[in-house]
Length: 286
Picture 1 (cartoon, one colour):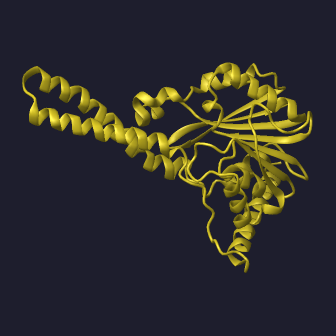
Picture 2: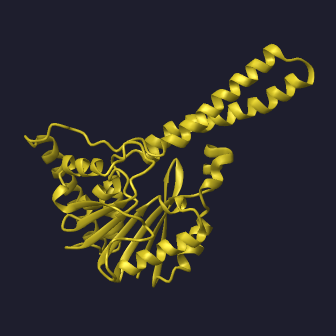
C-alpha cells in the first residue's frame, strides 16, 4: 500500500513538472509567471503604519515633553511602535515560509493520495482568491475539473479575471473555472461534488454560527462519501510569539477539532503541518 502511494505521489510530481514545462514553452504565452498577489498584506501594512506612528509620537514626546507626560507618552507610544514593527516585519518570513504561492503542489498531492482520491472528479476550492490553491488542486488531480469560488474582495491582486489568467499561465485552464460566489451559498446542487477544499478561510467568517452554516453548505453539495479539506493556521505559542496581541484573530487546534467534529461528517482526520507556524490540516468525509 505504501509503495502504491509513493507511485501516485511520483506521478503527480511528474505531472506538475510537465505542466510547468508546458507553461514556459507555450508560444502563445506572453506572461511567464502567474500573479497571486501578496496574501494578507493589507492588515500587516496597516499594523506597520500604526507602529511607525507610535515611534513618531514617542520621539516627539522625548523631544518636547517633560516629567510624567514624557514617560507616559514614551511608554504607551513606544509599546505601540514595538508591537506594530514586530508584527509588520514578521510578515516577511510568514510570506516566504507559509503564504508564498510556490512549491505547495506536493502538499495537496500528498493529501489526496493519502485518502485514495483520484479520477474524473468534480472539485470546488472555496475562497480561492487569485487561484493559488485551485490551481494546485487541479495539478494534484489531473483528471478532475476544479471550480474556484470567491467573493473576490480584499486580497491584493484579486479580481475575477486574475485567477483565470493564472490558470492559463499554469497550463490548467481547460480544467479550471472561476465563479463569483459565497461559501454560505455555493452555486452547486445537492450531492454533486466529490472534493471541496478551503484554504485558511474559515477563520475569516465572522461568527461561529456562520462557520457552522458554511460547514453545512459544504456538506450539502458533497456527494455521499465526498471529501472536505480545510487548512488553518493555529493559535499556539508560535502564533503568539509572531503575532503578539493579534494572535486571537486565529483559533486554536482544539477549537477547530470541536467545531468540525460537531459538523455531522462521518469521519475526521487531523494532521499538522509546520512552516514557521503550525497549520492544522483537516479532512472530513460525508
